[in-house]
Image (cartoon, rainbow, N blue to C red):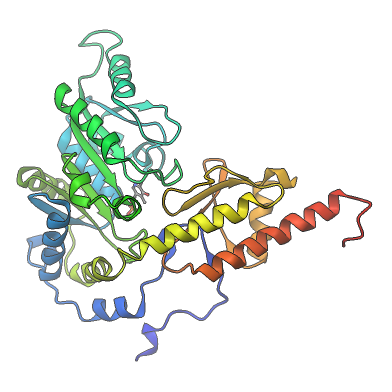
Length: 369
Ligand SMILES: *Cc1c(COP(=O)(O)O)cnc(C)c1O
């Protein structure tokens, strides 16, 4: 095999910063190398078209559309659902509010009314209260509400899952209020694997939904948005407006098809690894685990009880061969296909070593050094 297909040989750090860090597997690289390609912008890339059909079927929607990434799926979906100066409601820690650099403000000119929740999941009562806030003073003072956004799984709420019942309640509320529902389903398949509920069942409750291939699915590029034929036709127009139309994109879509065939069921391993990590961290002195029972593949915790800052903790950890990140004022560890169960044990040993070193410093009578 040519050396260009070999992964790099530099010192390996256990990659827990994000599930976006996973490297394409050797088998995925072969699928990518052998992709049949055409002009995606003209709708003529056979691999992209096959992927779109697969995702439409997986999500039980009429049509689906390839995108370079998930952020653009959100920009475009919100654009299609709304008109400038409409009202949108979403959880206060939603990715569209916190991590897209105000993209929906730029793409769609909407006002997003945040709903404060504990774990990213809101109820019809919460949604009604948000509508009431938007309509504090009657129109034309308050913006007309148009769209509800939900996130499955909820990233900044620790990978929390909307149950089918919770989602159905919001969908019914939206119908009654004549609002559309958009699902940021970056990790929808994690929710499916965690609950046993099918992607079609979750997706049937919403008007538009996309899945990301660069998170737990482990592909290097790509996300696919699904909805009605009319919705997708409009989405295609705005994808072009935002310069998201590509040429021989099948080279990337082949990695996504490979991921659908090989990397979905294995998400259960990531969830097990996250649970094991949370359980082990709970037993370490000075670590406060905010997600003691992770619902999917994320663990959030605070190491402040060790008497060191989060930055120093992260530096110490990296010195011991493990990388994690800082999100929402906490340390976040995300499991994925490049993190094995022995990596989890090694990570716990590294955190124990940091804890023991701090303990030794704090108890002057101890003979530890
Ligand atoms: C990663 C992520 C996105 C953005 O997807 P990209 O493919 O990185 O653009 C959107 N929403 C959520 C919840 C995410 O985790």
